Image (cartoon, rainbow, N blue to C red; front, top):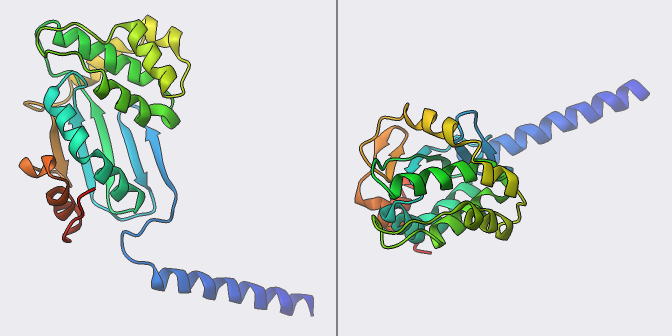
Length: 214
């Protein structure tokens, strides 16, 4: 009798799984969207069970055009990631060769590596909000400012930020990246253009749908 009940339970469980798979939409989120740090310092925001397209975003935190993109489409991108419609890979890089932009960028990116995954997106928001201006003239992203921004994002990582212990590693990874400028955005390996500055157009590129402005 016990064996028969176990067999029935297993059969029901199998049927339930088949039912879920049959009605699940391709690319639909399982609700397990997480931000994870990769060995190279990139950050992946994705539902790993989804078969969604991959959006690689190369950004320099001292880049005004990156800030423009962030301010315009970041809410849309995060919504699509949470819906399981896209997997976003954030690649912080240092694209600038001249001062003070280069040092600004390095300090910010090194600090970002100190911040835990749970607080990283909020810290990224802080970075763009406090981006040194005017570009090409202003020095900023001091270690004290960055440590304060991390605390505002919920991460007490003052010692790591002040030591800039990840600066060398960040530059080593940046040297491996072959891009001409930032932001550089690739969708499944295909470079996108001006649609990255239009929330509805970017959503259409990702999903093939009409897009929604948020």
